[in-house]
Image 1 (cartoon, rainbow, N blue to C red):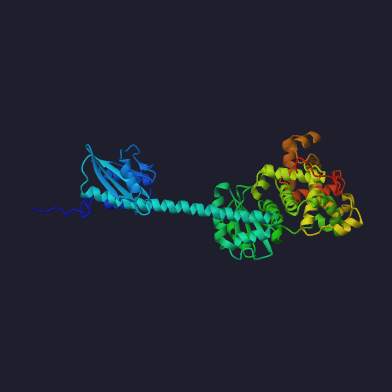
Image 2 (image 1 turned 45 degrees about the vertical axis):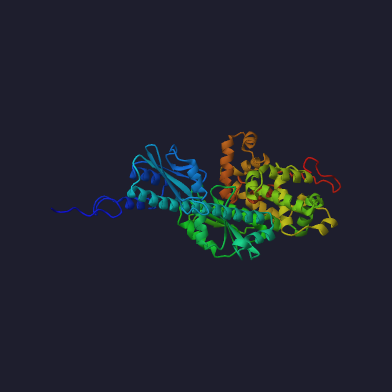
Length: 508
């Protein structure tokens, strides 16, 4: 009589038949598996019973959460006093097994109940399954720890960027030195902004870090969901980022001119401005053009004297308070209060309160675009290092005098003439929109057109002027100054407080 095939020594089907229970259990460790719930469900079916996985607080992680177990025995296993227990409760047979080493504490407790006694095969299945569950629990712990580490690292990178945005380069270098030694051992850097969809941003940020070999600071922009900010001390990352963007459709790159670390906020504004140009270029990338800026056409001594006079009320404040107000106001003028708050890591109410205080000290109305342009000019002049104290003491300078130079008038006429050549009468619309404080509805009432027409004209003027207008910032303020130079807008109401006038009690 011919004999059958030898049974599998591990207690499954004969060789060549269906997978054994051990093979089925190993399948749970495949990359497509690794699910605690599925492993516990498989175990219940394999032993023809019920199963549950409990954590150290006896809370169910997977399986039948209604499974009756002896809480005292589970507590003993969790405490490390025993590693397993077997008992019979009426017609039910129960196995409790520690998942992982009992010292200092197991990762969990596996509870299995069935009506038949546990034979060797069932006991082996329970023991081996506990080992698989231990691996899955450890993997989950490492995954969670890795995510926490990634989040902490991302927060640290953002903190460094925020310190640079408020010109605190000393603190930024100290924070960076621990994890990225040498990253900020430089006086200058370029800022790049890479734009994609919000859904793709995390992958894009990882790709930016990989492409630049970790030699840059990569930050997911807290203000714009689709933006990745890259601060690069060296020159090499520019080409690497261009190649990266070229491989990804619907991804764009804007880069700044090289700036000192203290002018990171200005570099960021330049990168955002270049990004607007990149969206219209076939290679999807653009670097901020070092065009002729209006302040470079002004008398330097007169500009410093005027700026110093306008900002003098701030000089009476304590140094750290003045620095905080100036840094916040500069960002608040470049971006919306909400975006500035996200970049600085403070609330938007804090940004608005600080800007309100500056507004009160300077006796100005920052809702007026001409005022914003003037204050922006003064703050940037201060940031470049000029204080104008000596020149200011010698003579008082009016903004009108500052804008009266021949070179500046030529620049302004050339810039605005671009709008005149367009058949849509963009110049008239842009002028009315600026006079209305950037409000399309108010400008539409003044012009007798639909607000959407105003928005379309302003948006259409951006590629003509090669400047962003709808996003507040340096580009817009240059266009405002051009209108002031040619006399198409009234001079802003700048009424600095007298040095002996007290600060506003509301904001003090």
